[in-house]
Image (cartoon, rainbow, N blue to C red):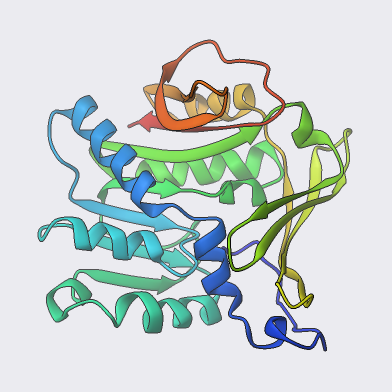
Length: 275
């Protein structure tokens, strides 16, 4: 993502010294199979046809672009990001392993999402809360308007959001990913401006640590604000998709349209904005 600051490895010995932060990010943060399933199913239900063209904004390693072209031989994908280093990593690790025909259906652009020139597409997506790097209503509104302009007439914009009362706390959350521990660090939060500084750290079985593998300086936008700005940008219909729960009260990965949510400690949802 473009909001991630330049990373410098520490002198920590052990696994952390040679670990690949982009590989770790893909394994701990992204779930492109889930994103694809949701986008393809939702678009098809809304528009009565399958989506073919995708633009992945803030694409990072372009993992979703890879997922997209592998799913259907007619699918094409465009990835947009400002970070040349992460795009180069994606070309080597996500594009190159594809067959020739699939590679030809991916285009990666080192560009600003506010000015990138691309052909109109069926779907634009901004996942992993990447749009939150825009800290003002004016800048986020301009981005949403730009997205709308870059969609085909019946295109749909997909994004995700998170919240809950724990999202405003300065805290660290650890997740065991098997071969490493993923640490989400909400380092600072300003309740007046909504500005946040967050980091991702990785801890390894040998005791070594990769600190601040990724850092984010953004604003924690609320769902009402996001919906209002999408509507102000000209989107005709904005739908929130809330995650269901299993018998233990945990998220089950199934998202359905909702107009009323639950006051959970922490939640993640999808939004679909129709052009």
